[in-house]
Amino acid sequence: MTHATELPELDFRPRMPRRRDVPIGCVGAGFIMADCHLVAYRQVGFAPAAIASRTPGRAQEVAARHHIPRVYGDYRELLDDPSIEVLDIAVPPDVQLEVVREAVSRAGHLRGILAQKPLGVDYSQAKEIVELCQAAGIVLAVNQNMRYDQSVRACRRLLEVGELGEPVLATIDMRAVPHWMPWQERLGWVTLRIMSIHHLDTFRFWFGDPARVFASVRPDPRTAAKFAHEDGICLYILEYDSGLRAAAWDDVWTGPAREGAAADIGIRWRVEGIEGTARGTIGWPDYPQRTPSTLEFTTRRRGEDWQRPRWGEVWFPDAFAGPMAQLLCALEDGSEPEISGSDNLHTMALVDACYRSAREHRAVAPAEILAE
Image: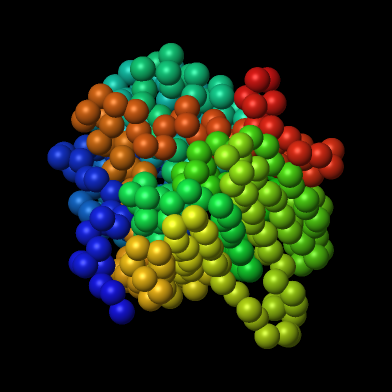
């Protein structure tokens, strides 16, 4: 086994801000906030200072668990707290625009906002959120946290330093049954805006924006018994002008794994380049068990052996420190966050292009969406 210390160029950890005590106001007290954001923030020394939730009792419980000093019965009261410099929003996507509107209209002391993915219900709402923050002079970052999974970030580094050469083919194979959120039923969403958005953003993180995408979807039989939806099992191919092809199949059915058959659960990815190949696994499906994601790579320069660096961090919850860290760094430096709202518009457009492609049975250029 090759240890990570022998490959310093693959360091996947996010850059940390010089100041970690910036007061953060947390809107939402559900699983993502309570078990991911706040756990990761505590691990790296960030400073959540206040929390609000539509369920005050839940906010009290989460505040006590994470030693947050102030609890507000309404998020608007939190926005009026002049000590809060950064807002961390973790609410359903159809509520997010409302919270941002209130934030930019009421909170002149706010410097930055970290918003959840998806950034609103579609590209149009995402664009409005970005424009609202720009007009208010608030720095907006988006919590596309899969970019901070160690194997994803280390693969990006392999591509940056040329270990793999020109990329030829990339794939992500997800066979997993996520924990669905109650608000998905009212929105009629299952996979594209919830899970596939991670993989589409990862492809953008690795390779940039594709020229076009072709998507095919069908309902997930298990979830279809609960509510109507179109985007259950999703397959899509991204075409790049360079000739690169990237494809994923996001299978949240995985066969009758919850109905008595044996389960075959996991997420695997692979990137093939002219000079080398990288492959890996994403440990998230084992949550709450801590299962680190993995990376292996082989190159013509290094010989026929597979290099196998290993790290102890996991996507859920450790990677959630990355998006907040890059927002705080951007505020210190006066720069754009790594996952800025403007950048994330391209991911949102790519997701909308997948919906359009599936409905119209044709390849769709994200530029079509961006032009609207």
